[in-house]
Amino acid sequence: MTSVNYSIKQNGLTVATDTASDFESITVSVLVKNGSRNENQQNNGISHFLEHMAFKGTSTRTARDIAEEFDMIGGYFNAYTSRTSTVYYAKVLKDDLEKATDILTDIILNSTFAKEELEKEREVILQELCMTRDTPDDIVFDYFQETAFKDQPLGRSILGTEEFIKKLSREELCDYFKNQYSTKNTIISAAGNFDADKFNDMVDDRFKNFQTKSVSKYEKANYSGGELRVSKDLEQNQFLMGFEGLSYLDENFYDLQILAIILGGGMSSRLFQEIREKRGLVYNISAFSSSYSDCGIFGIHSALDSKNINLLIDLIIQELLSVTEKIDDMEIERAKAQVRSNLLMSMESTTSRAKKLCNNFAMFGRYISNDEILKKVNDVSVGSLKKIARQILSNNNITITTLGNVANICSYNKIIDKLKL
Image (cartoon, rainbow, N blue to C red; front, side, top):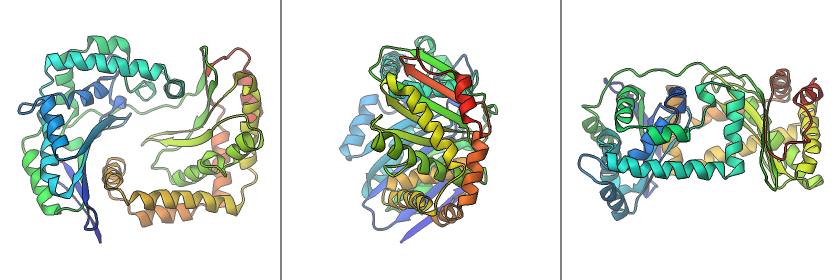
């Protein structure tokens, strides 16, 4: 049996629990609605840097203490920064909930941001930046985002720039934490085998003195589109084509998710069958839909020998135009089956459950049940898919990003002409 409960405390903190008696583990997750979108051009990368520093010592624990205490209970803990949030989480055995919660809340509430640790972590993050730049199928997505949302926070790198990372001071980091971390933009969740009341009491005790100030909102995004060609000596060309997508609050959100699966969401998808299986041009090709509260982007990604890239572009356009005219019930059912299985199988993981709780409240301000999601998925039809496909393709502000040998790729305007309905 499972039971989902939540409460919004007087100080603005949201606490959500998903208890299930048949698990041996528990995951505790803390989501702060603060990511790279909350930054400006001068401090781009500070949210990610702050996340790294959380593990580098508190007023009562050194960085080594934190690592050893988690290892002593056999726990797994980590954190990540996205464009919209920073998440800290820990997965432990059910008897170690109190210890995990104590350490996790300590690193968020009581980090000292010691100067010597900051200098060491500065070098770590610079190495992470170099690693991303040396990974073509990672950095091309940064280029893609930058092109789609030009000169905006949503278009900037989560890692930030080398220049900023090198000069960030402890004072800037402390000020940013004070301004952007608050009970009013923090969501705490726990999923697994535990007593929800005891967990709520622990959280209440630890956050009773945490700051309750309102935090600044990010600026509304404006999808611009455009083209970026980055010349680099690579074995393969990285290629991304994108269109303005939908907000996750849009009523057609699930139509676009299903469309992405039909086009490039699995081995039976149109792009995979036509471009890999039939022609052997690529190792992999995928379609995706990324959504935010105020906008979204729909895209297709692949990598291949540069001599075949114009053929790849023509084949992608062929499938995009085809999906506006012909979709059969069987491929819709296959796509829906993928959504259902991914959703329901994720419920076998306490980490996925805790993540779902945090994301629900961060995005929608409420819990979204699986039944509600599946009903919306089941409502997707041939007619609604064709309609959303035409809507996406009707915007001529496409985004094209290429990394590799870019000399002989057909022009941006030619691609737009080929896409006209």
